[in-house]
Length: 294
Image (cartoon, rainbow, N blue to C red; front, top):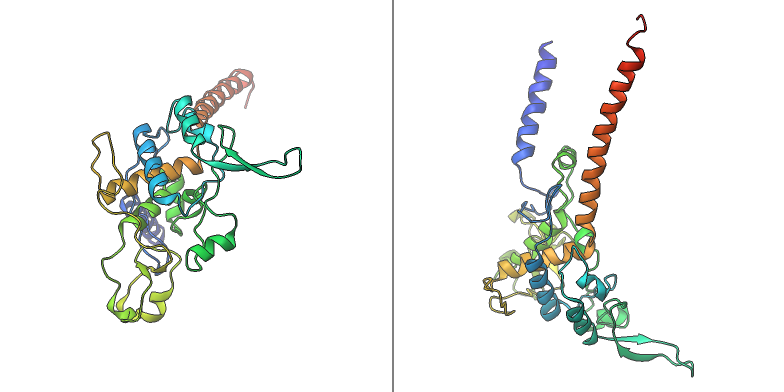
C-alpha cells in the first residue's frame, strides 16, 4: 500500500510541474518557452490585424528567400485568415508573376497572378536557391509552423493532449527570430564567420566546439533577418523585433493551417453532440432495462 501511495504522489508531482513548465526540447536541445497566442486553446481565433502585419513582414523581409507555394492568393480574402477584401487580394496577386502555358505555340509564358494562383517561389529550383544563399536552402513557409517544433517527450506530450497545446511551431519560430546574439560565443573561435542562434534546433556545432560551455543551438544559414523600425506599421503597433517576430510567426501558423478556426468550431460541435448522444444512450438503457430483474 505504501508503494502505491508513493507512486500516486510521484505522478501528482509530475503533473503539477507539467502544468506550469514551459515548452522545451528533449535532451540538450534548446529550451523553447511557451507563449500566449490568440489562436491557442479550443476556442482560439486568429487576430486579423496580427495576420495582416505578419503578411507585411513576410512580403518585405522573408519573401525574397522563402516561398509560400501551398497558399493561394484567394486565401487572403477568405474568412478565418487575414481578411483582406477581394479587391485587395487581387491587387496583391497582380504584383506577382507566374509561369503559365503552354500557349498555342507550345511555349510557356509569364503573366500576372490571379486569385486562383498560389504564391510563386522566389527561386526556379532548389539548386538556384542554394546558389543564392551560400549553399543553404531556405525552407518554404507554407507548412513550416507545423513541421518545425521542439520535441516534447514523455510525459509532456500527454499533458499537451489535455491542455490542447498545439503552438509549438509558432513558439519555436518566434524564439528563433528574437534570439540572435550580438556576437557568436567565444568558444567558436575567431575564425567562425557563420550565424549562431542558441534556439536553432538543427544546429550541432556547439556539441562539438562548445560542449564545455553547455550551450545549445548552433550554426544557421540565415543571418538575423529582423531589426527595429525595419517594417512600417500603420496601426500604431510598436515596430520592434519582438512584434515583428510574433506577427510573422502567427501568419506562418495561419499559412500552415488556414482552416484552424473552422476545425475548432467543428470539434466543439462534435464534442457537444457526443456528450448529448452518450446521455441519450444512458437514459435509453435505463428505460429498456428498468423492469428486468437483475
